Structure formats: C-alpha cells, structure tokens
Length: 102
Image (cartoon, rainbow, N blue to C red; front, side, top):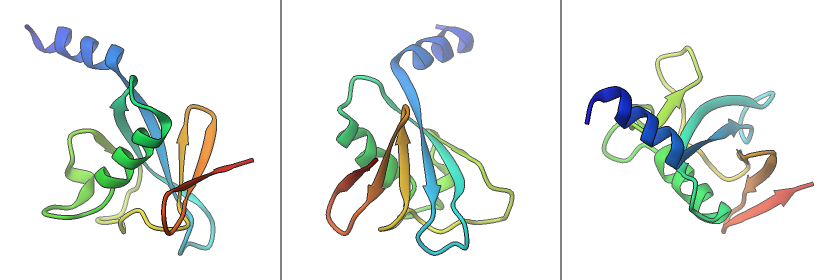
C-alpha cells in the first residue's frame, strides 16, 4: 500500500480526542490531539489518550498517535484534574478513573 492509502485507512479507523491540561495551570490549555481507534468505548479512548500523554521511556509528544498543540520545548504529562474531550463530551481525570463533566 502507498502512503496516501495508509493515511486514508488510518483516518477512517481513528478519531482524534483532545487533551486539555488544567490541573496546575492558571487557565486550561489544549496540549494534544490523540488518535484513538473509533471502535473503542469512551472509557478505553480516555485510557489510551492518558497513556499516550504520559512520558515513560520518551517524551509523550513523540508518540506517533499524538499531535502536540504547544509551542514550548516540553509539556508535563496528563494528570488528575485534566480533561479529555471525546467528540463533544468532556471528561475529567480523577484519582481513579474518569467523570463526565456536565
């Protein structure tokens, strides 16, 4: 398969969720778009985005599924108190799991 075909297939199978850091900032800021499998449940999409925006062996913004949305050299990992948008539904990262924001 050529590169364009692979990109089209990836686009059809994935959706971008938005990661918003808010826990330690003066105001919320969008830090990443993360491509996740469309067929996953919202909870699995949240867990995938959380994992992909945490630095483990390398800086999280180097993950291929991540599009960084900040200009500085680095950015902290996603943490309790941050948000992720799945479609138009906003979720807050809790100490254990996620809560839907009304």
